Length: 119
Image (cartoon, rainbow, N blue to C red; front, side, top):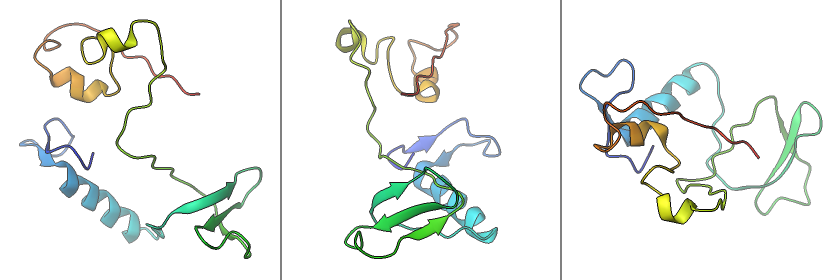
């Protein structure tokens, strides 16, 4: 979202909204409701029981901090599946952003399916 210049079809923004501006609004709203936002690298996490335990980078040998919820942000690069033909059809039928591709001229007004893979 941060790399996206203009998000054209997000609900509540009839003229579109800049990606970084939208992210700032998400953050502001989340903080308003009590979220603690950590913008440091978390190098270790234990999701085996609640509350979840996590260690910040450089503090792996100290007592962990705990949380009831985790959002893992892995960055703005697509996670490919290494399927046969994936390189050939990347951004021409296979991609990682259904919303973005829906606005691409070759997909406009065309019925298509979106598949989500979790691994």
